Amino acid sequence: RLYNIFGIEPKTTRLEEALLVVVEHEGHKIGLMVDELLGQQQVVIKSLETNYRRIEGISGATILGDGTVALILDVGGLISLSGSGGSGIRRAGNDEQAA
Image 1 (cartoon, rainbow, N blue to C red):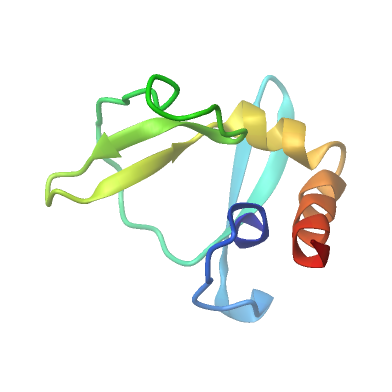
Image 2: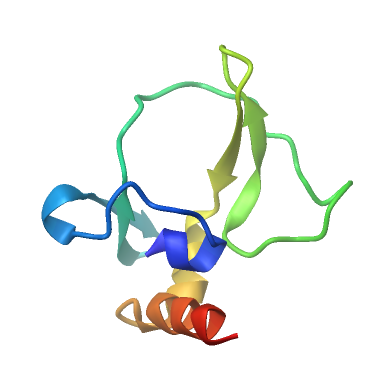
């Protein structure tokens, strides 16, 4: 669950109320539990590494048409975090809660 990794408050933690987005990178698939789908847009991605440290699972940021800054997920990085079968994402979230 992405909210565990990134330390954000989800709209819901109930699977029955959430959406699952399946993403694939180099033959590996994972499901991402998301609050809502906002649509599809073409954006210019700006790297965050110039001003900030590298954040695993985030490839950069963009400014949306309404001026909102949006982070761009790095599917390959999320799959690396997930390990096999998504256990790494759960483990990362549990470690963060324990700290």
